[in-house]
Length: 110
Image (cartoon, rainbow, N blue to C red; front, top):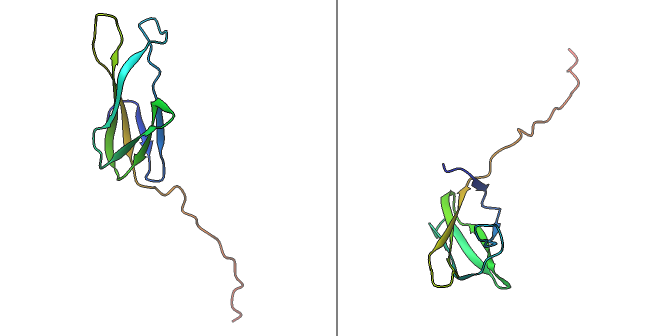
């Protein structure tokens, strides 16, 4: 499993928001930001209607998948591609307690 895997269950959702920066860490413009899922049967990506840099991620089944963000940097005459990959592991709900109870009763008289 890759490092920095985000663990979630089918009852969860995640949001991802990108903040493009240049080599100095200063905000930098990008264009053509695209979001995709490596497996659309595992993770569904829904763009935020108010913020193109943000998406909601909904798990659809138990499996591993990645969300990919790609954008073109605005570098004057130069062009390229910036890619970020966010890994997720959708897991089933797991027991965290045995939920036992104790019942104390009177012994029968013999």
